[in-house]
Every structure is written in C-alpha cells, then in structure tokens.
Length: 283
Image (cartoon, rainbow, N blue to C red; front, top):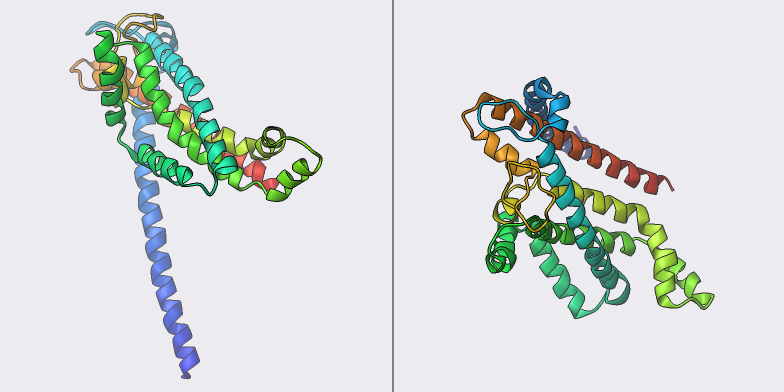
C-alpha cells in the first residue's frame, strides 16, 4: 500500500472515530432533553385545566390555580423588557456604529460579557441591596429591575452583532445622498438588522421568564392577587420553587403544571426566534 493510501485510511479511521463520538455526545444530550420533556409532559399535563388559569394559588391541602403567579410573571417580564431593551439596543448601537474601534467599546464589551455570564442570584442580591433594603420591603418593581438587568447584556450582544453584519455599503449609500448618520442608522442599519435584534429580545424574554433566584430577593411572593407594583407579587418561577418543596400533593401538582407552562412558553419563543433568523438568512 502506498504512503498516500495509508494516510488516507488513517485519516478516514480518525474521522470515523470522531464522528461516532460526536453523534454519541449529541445523542446523550438529546436523550436527557427527551427525558426532561417527557417527565414534564407526564407530570404536568394531568394538572392542566381551566382552574389553573382562573383561580389563585391555594392554601395548603386545597385545590386551586396559578392565576396570580402567571399574572405577576407577565407583569414583571413586560416591565423588565420595556426597561432593559432600549438600554441594550442603544448600548449595542453605540458599540457597532459610533465606537466600534474605541477603547470604551472594549471596556463595555468586557463588562457586558461578565454580566452575560453572571449568576442571576448575584443580580438579585445587588438589587436587594440597591432597592429592597432602602425601601424596607419587597416589591414587584424591584423584581422587574432585576429582570431588566438580566435583559440588558443579551440585547447588547445581539444588537452589536447584528449591526456589525450590516454591509458598510448600505451605510455609505445612505451617507452619499446626504442623510445624517442617525438617519442612516435608523432607516438603513436598523431595518437591515431588525429581525436579528428582535430575535435577541425574544431570547432575553426566554431567559428571564424562568428566573427564580432574582425574584426571591426582590419580589418575594404573594399568595393572593396583587397588582400593586410597590408590594410583593407572586411569580410563576418562585411559586414553582415553593410548591415543589412542599409536602402537599396539590401544590406539587401545580408546580409540575407551572413548570410545563414555562417550558412550553420558552420553547415557543425559541422556535419563533429561530424562524426569524431563518427568514433573515433567506433574504
């Protein structure tokens, strides 16, 4: 056998071994995902009924629903997105459009990467010291601020990356017709990167919708209906955490059902975000 043929066979064997290991690793990951989803469907579907969406969290030993927890999660998530998204988009715009090669951008990017990987419980402790202790009580607005801090680094990263992908020729064309730079960014760069920016916002929503630790230190929980943002408010992740640790079967069933609701919501947002990305690539 020639040297070239021997080398080809050796590379082919190594490629086969690595391919087998990669497929096995992917299979193991998918198997665990299937087990988790299967357990959620098995345990959670049996508790899905109209009462889950129309009744309050029950006292120990009684039947009830998750209406106040679902409402609280939606309210704090919406406020967190409203507060965090403009900050993230503007910061990402500066890094991509105005300060792409500045030292400040390097520093901001480094800090943003730290925030992106920081444990959410640290954010909760920070907001606790910043707002809860001075105010003297837990509140929904403190929980929303904690979620907004988690939103910002995700939106910053996706906004910067999407704007960096916009060809400079488009910006130059806008500048050539006499448009100011802010008009070029708004009418050209944002339009070209809009689907990617929206995808980042959806991913940020998916991340904060299941966060428990920050809300334990900020919004705490509320067994009753509350629309007062300056008072403790129930949330689905915290309710799941408390109910799952309880000895009552009714609470444990509601915890499984709540976990299923959050999981399906996150999966739906992720699929929608992927579809937006696919449409952008098709264009």
